[in-house]
Image (cartoon, rainbow, N blue to C red):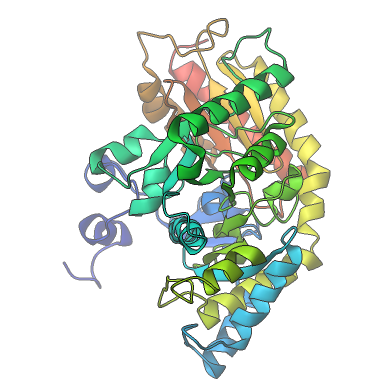
Length: 463
């Protein structure tokens, strides 16, 4: 196939293996081709404009209008030092960015290891937690506790942490010793259950699992401050404080997976600050450079790194060729500078109530069952039976509704959002817009979602 004489769509369908993309996109269906972005919008090759209500993939914090400024920083770094490792050497961009992250991270989280993605970040955290306990002589601490339906990545160790059966089952057996507990989804819990009772239930379940497995066999508990998969699952009051106390009591590390919640998504630099708890390790990626370049990493407590350095290996026994890449770090430093200049965190805090209020209007649409989330991460759970809180239509299965009605309606009105069917069989619509979206932009986004839902309800005969 000639590159010169074929369209981008033809080339992509023939040669590009795309992320989590069904076979139909390679064969029968049209493939969207985006060629330009500005503000909160992207344009396809026909010129049609879409509101990017998912910020790329929960990551373009600055939207699409700051590439030139970040690009200038990238160009400067490329002209000075286009590449160098951090293998027993350092360079200014990585050192400065590590110091910046230590300054905004809570507590004594002062030590930064860089990666290139969220999966790599969680992989690095697994190894650091294991090595920390080995360095303390606790070789039996090999197990990890994560939550059901949670997503932590696609590499071997990170996928093992996943609580998403459909993502992991094809590749099992995965890393041994991973156990899963309930997530914090309130929808479909007993209506008479109080928030305090829900918190008590969740903490008792974790405690029971720890006791069953043996407290001295658990290396770490890994949790997202707001769980993405399952649909913007927020914690009940006291939940993270209870998990922190449990970890302290049993000598277990607490890892906050902030790949999505970090860098302003919830109105703070990190979600753990938003919910008032202190992790031992934070993993990050996505928003640190607004996804303009790939970058991720972890931030660890001083005591963890010092223990590892004093341990039998005499080093953190992990390495990545591109970890701390100077060009990526230069881009991230500029991204953080722009975020501060625009007061992006303040914008999210100020506009979050508007986002919530606008979404509440959508309860008038008959299939909207639950609306939940925080900051600039919100989800709608769709049902045909509000009393049973489920998608109960035998005539129109949930997957068919999403694929044949809702997804085309969203494309028609020009809005990008995440559409899926959750583990319980209900459709989910997720919104996570660029953090520069102001109140007017949020109203526009919700208006587009309202149009898409209304069209899908009509075309699916669900009035």
